[in-house]
Each structure stands twice: as structure tokens, then as C-alpha cells.
Image (cartoon, rainbow, N blue to C red; front, side, top):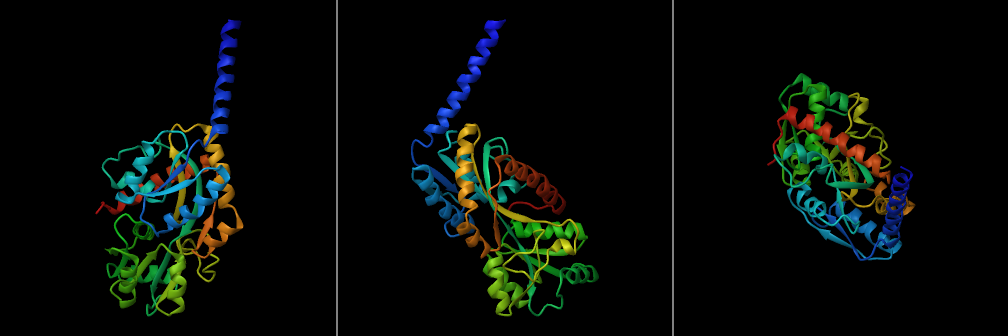
Length: 322
């Protein structure tokens, strides 16, 4: 019995030493940070900010690999199938948590195939109307939609986008009858809003709202996060008018499932240090975003909570992937 206990203890020590060695030896070669979108978007910009600074702290190059397509599925699949050694990572966005509800099947398990590293940032969508709209607050917009059911149209950049889901969440919570009109890109939605073709738009970039509002083209009614944004201090949270409302966009980094815990801890420590730097926070503020850098466990909890939340919205609205 004593011999058996000693063997178990020795095995535990060996595992600890092996894990410590893995962390000490990591990284052994250049890292690849997969970006499941095209170049130039928010996810890509954040990745290109982090990559050179992470390379400096780890002593190995960090190469950006853009793999756009299928709402992030193509890039995520690549990382899910990669060796679980921390050398291949992916920067995901909210579609990662929405896709299980939109696709009949995925080539990976959204939760079990990945090891969360950290949530990089959160960003608010902004509910806007044309400047000639009669409504000046979210409360007035909800009242108008109830007074004239079925007459208000809202635009989005596509079925299943956060703007679409955010509007459907509001429709469900406030029991409104509003109609979805999808477009291919945000500039098209803005043109439709200003021309009166649509009456509402949950825009994903708060940074875009500022010049549009200054030019007198749009009016911001509310932000989708629980707190006001420094970039739009005069715009209250939608939750002030619709208790409990929240539709937050985010970006975060995942590794393949099975990546040693010590490697995840090292990656978290180095990335969180970058994310929490004044330089990074200042850059995000201009986009209406907030730097986070939370723990792997906290990021995992957010993903699972969003999977449940958006599954209900997708089912209630009957949303299907285009």
C-alpha cells in the first residue's frame, strides 16, 4: 500500500515537472495567430496590435494568418485541429458563440475543442436613427414601434450579425413588431438609414457614429452595454429604457483544447499585460471599446453564457444563416 502511494506521488511530481518544463520551453518556434476575418476589420486590427508585442515578450515571431469565411468557422476549425502546444492561436469574436445556433453542424465543438486564454476587449453596438427621425430617445423609439406595429424597419450587415441579434433581442424583450432588412456592408446600411429606407440600425462601430453624428446625418439613442461609453458620453445605455438589455461584442484568444495549463497561463500572463497597457486602452477608447484581459475561466464562462443567450434569440426570431 505504501509503495502504491509512493508511486502515485511520484507520478504527480513527474506530471508537475513535465508541465513546468513545457512552460519553460515554450515557445520553441514562431507562433501563428489565426484571424478568421479579412484584413482591416476590428479583429484583424487588434491582432496586429498584439502580435508584435507578444513576439517581443515571448522571444519568438508571432505571424498573423487571415482565414476569413463562414462567420469565423474556417479559421476556428484550423486552430481546433492544430497541435495543442500553444503555438497556434485564434482571435475569435461573438459569431463564435452564435454559430452553434446558426449551423446545423460544425467541424468542432465550440466549447470542448478550445482552451480559452483571455478576453481581449468588449465593444458596444449603438442604436442609431436618421437625424430627421421624430424619436430622440430609446423610450420614444419603443413607444413609436408599439404605436405603429410593423411600420419600422431596421438594417443590419447580415443575418446572424450582432446588429441583427441585438435588434431581435430588443424586439423580443419589448414585444415589438419591427422588420429586418439585411445589407452587405455598414456603409450601405447607413445610406439606407439616412435616406429613410430603414428607420433603425444597431451599428457595431461606435467610432463610426461620432463623425456621422457631428455631420448631422444620424442620432445615437442608446448603447448596448450596461455603461456609457467615453467616446459617446451623452448616449445612455439601452438598458435604461429596457431593463436587463445587453448585447456586447467582444474579441478573445483561444488555443486548441489540451494545451498544457502552464502554457495557457504563460500566454494569458503575457497577453493580459499587453491588453492592460495604457497604449492598448487608449487605442480601444477611440473605437468605443474597453480592454479586458480577464482569466481563462472568466472568458470560458462568457462564451458559454453567450451560446445560451443567442440560442434563445435565434430560436425566437427564427433566424437562419444566409
